[in-house]
Image 1 (cartoon, one colour):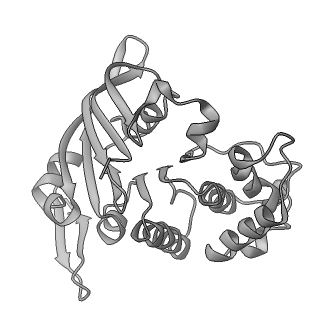
Image 2: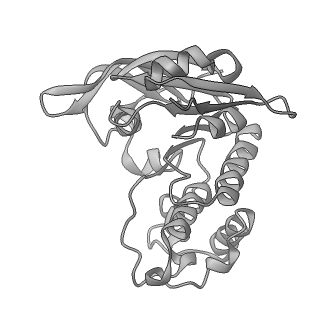
Image 3: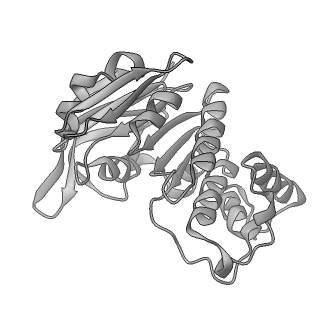
Length: 258
């Protein structure tokens, strides 16, 4: 099966000093990759480079079997959805209207949404357990509520590949779990996804694969159960870690008190 994403030898950054130092990453349908690493190590840069928002200086990126520079923006947006880390202005829009922006790549010449588009947006809001936000004005949204609407906007886009930059930021524990559970359910139905995360335990619970980035280089990557080991996490974050096995069989990790 053709990978949804294939990045090879990616070198990218801001100004003369690259942040990424030759990163390889291949993502297939049915895989949820978590990107873990210290602050400033290139996690968001990786996603921006893949999208072409941040030009890379060396390497290559293929999306759905096609070189990234060959994709027209509208066609790319019909297949790849981006859930950014930062918020965009929401004032003047309702929650439903913000989510419906995700349908833009699929609309006709006049850019008018149909009853089907509205029904799809409402269904995604209900799926994420935030249907009550449909009529909430943008200026009345909390940070967590905006985060959930950004995720809903990405899902309503109906992509083949979903790229999420810190999708659990600003969310309480219940919504962190709920959001990643819905993404994982979509992945099991054939979606491919890459999520920048800071919580190792969320990665262990929901991701199928993980890539560990440190100083712009891949420290390790592969299936979660093979990569998430105490020694690797200690090398990744530069601090001692404790690990335990939950009754469910999921391994738990925590920094060791000094």
